Image 1: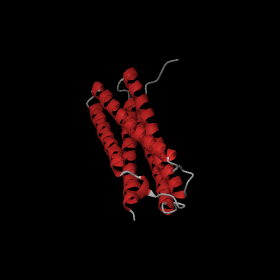
Image 2: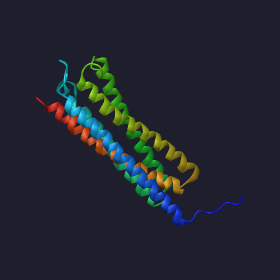
Image 3: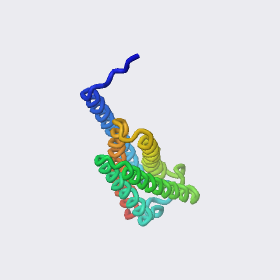
Image 4: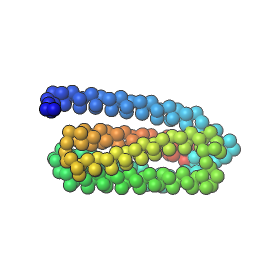
Length: 199
């Protein structure tokens, strides 16, 4: 059966629809995180006689997490710039750096969760901790999905180079990763910073 070439106009239309669909997904994620933030705001004072954020959170530790994630957003941007120059090796390098930084951030987050649980401050102890683990854990799940996405993009780059699907994937991933950084800034400010300085 003879294959039919897809016209550039149709390719552009597919790309536009895919991008629009991804923006819709980002909007639904905004609603999800807004709901989790609202839940945390309501429950943050319900410690059930246990410790609150001031007793549990270490601002230097969380600041280190924040700097790592923000740096990964910068390296992700460098990967996108390299893609526009069709510099494959540079894209691979910056994606690898982004992956390592994202994995380090996730490892620190899991370390924090593990320490809290071992000290008897799991999500079961109070409504405050339940909302904390749910909000921060949901962000961590998104980071995990982003790391898997980077791995898939790396394989595509090696096998196919700068195909239309790879370029589209890199562009959408960059949007997704920057979105997670914005969400984390809100988490750092509302959950950790305000929680650590509250009286």
